[in-house]
Length: 142
View (spheres, rainbow, N blue to C red):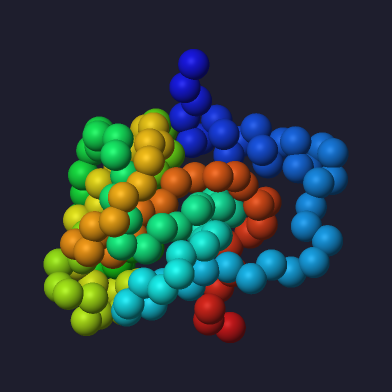
């Protein structure tokens, strides 16, 4: 049975808080840049943890698409969090990675299931939801 990302996030948050399973030390996360490098784990502003794969496409068909509204790959993570069955994204930038990944246009492809990844230079990155780290969004402005 498939669970929505909302249910996954809520369950992991409940378990983490009720059993005090919190990271003992700070972790280093992947940061979007104009050219995707290496990939790794990304934590979105809402605590979702994503496994990011640079220049990789997921083999599973997408169930929905959306625009980034000028927010780059961040817009894809945000859009996925608004779709109850979304557990993965692929981001195709509208330009050849000349803009920062957190600003700029492109198309987000939303997936419910995760398959295998294969190389695709047209895709900035694909990512799948792997967990939840309970935390409040951090403001970059004082």
